[in-house]
Image (tube, rainbow over the protein chains, first blue to last red):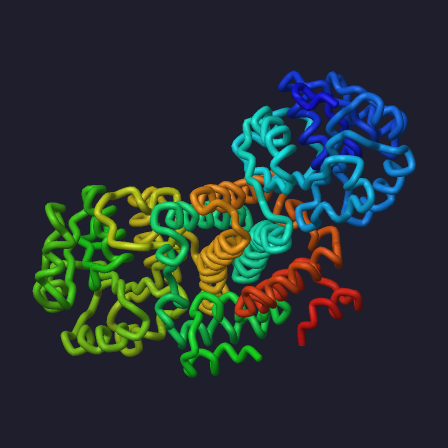
Length: 279
Length: 279
């Protein structure tokens, strides 16, 4: 099988699948897509020059590198289907960043298998190329097929990063803590400000511009050096005021406040373990 | 006392004091500074046209609007000094965002008092003007002097926001959770990636560009809608993998992971309270 200018198959044309399909197709690569709902798939692809397959069999006939862009829980069933169709001599990659290639089970002997995980937050279907430019794509693959996948990453104008399968959960947790965490911090801050009577029309701008300042400081100085405020100063009375008002108004957020403060202050000092009162 | 083109006094020329002093002075306002270490103060001011006072008495003689840019714990002693000097008919503001004007105690009858809190993270001394442009400055002041302070905010090209004293702790907690929280998330993610064997030279760029993407998504769609990833999908098996590896490698970060996940999933669903195991 020729992996030099491979035709790419995408199974599951959702947020990740559409980002990859749109970007590769606009880079001049032949892309074929398969989705459980073929009518929706046609709408999603719109006028892009992406082929539509009506079955996994058809996709296997056409493509030598196939990406399974499915939810973790839907991967096994798809692997079973590919196995029944006697898939062989192709590269099979999934995009679930927390799972190794073990999910491909018996196909591991007949196919080359890989993990291909864009470190990127997708919030919807991608209809324009470019979304993956300058991003990093984590790859688990042996040294025979890594160059093939790395070449495909470069077509996305992204950077391939070889990872060891055993490290995937921690790698993936870093993305989850950043993406979910940033949303969570901003959502909490917006609720606090609204309750504090801050004019609502200013809140989104205030909050995002403030976080951008923090990131700029981190870029200049590194994360630990960019820290300022009462946690850094260990201003117990201020922290106690925060805890009191959060307990009163947003008790569901107190664990978050305490665990952030604990993490930042990172101390065995009894003054703080007392006030933070974390089990 | 004339508040139309007031001379500004700054007591405490640290991160906040230097940001205000530098910016007002470059906006053509007469600024006088006082700091406990006059030699350091001279170095800090460098060649800026900012006057140096050698005593609070001198500052009181010269200025009609005085900003106490001190740590919370140092405010009382300074207020005592100003009281002994019979400060009167001036505007006295402090920049500690979690404290009301009660800190001014008996001076509240002889002076106009206010809180003046830039919603801004300062990581060092400011030697160039412009740092406060486009920021928001929370102000607690009665309607007589609010316009004077609002006018001074506009000289900084910032936006004044009138706040109620009772809301200050929650307002201030929002800034702390954002600033400390962002640093904490990025620091944790960097540690995870390093331990996961991600190439160290890529980590700072990966992490900050990823958070910038999240913020862009939040700006477009709002915080809750921008959420993606396993917490949003409620992918229990993935979350369990994260918990296991964090417990093994970074036990000090498990409370943070759990409280973020709990906050985001915001659920009474037993499947999740079980797995998250938060008291």
